[in-house]
Length: 181
View 1 (cartoon, one colour):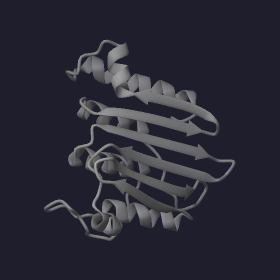
View 2 (cartoon, helix red, strand yellow):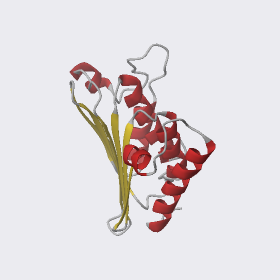
View 3 (cartoon, helix red, strand yellow):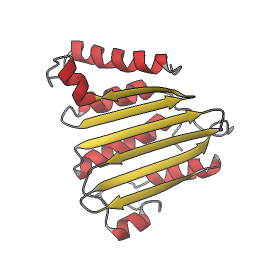
């Protein structure tokens, strides 16, 4: 089991990028009142063939050469242990969506610790990808679009210390505004 849900999000997004996605949406909804945490990661990649979709949650199944294929099965196991589950939908040439539901206050639920670091790594590690990040926490909403950020701030796609600091600060400020540190 990964000890941080943000690492699962990173794994799913990296798999989407490896498959050829150019747009990735990460949507998180923390709702303490309903005792529900949902995570959705969707992409516009090539989608998964039906057979791969059927096996996606099987341990050690992978469409890649030497990879272990444990990311989604471990996430599904964690979600089930926390009173939830994982669903995957996919359509060829249209993309894939991974949706996760967990009981927010479940004692075994891993934390959603470092979304700032996860999104910073994704955005700066793949400046060609259009990342959309929406994080809801108890009714408050933070939205971030990497391409809009680059356009509004006139930032070039060349990663440098100033750009790294700007992306980190934008994410940190938005997450703090909704009560997520």
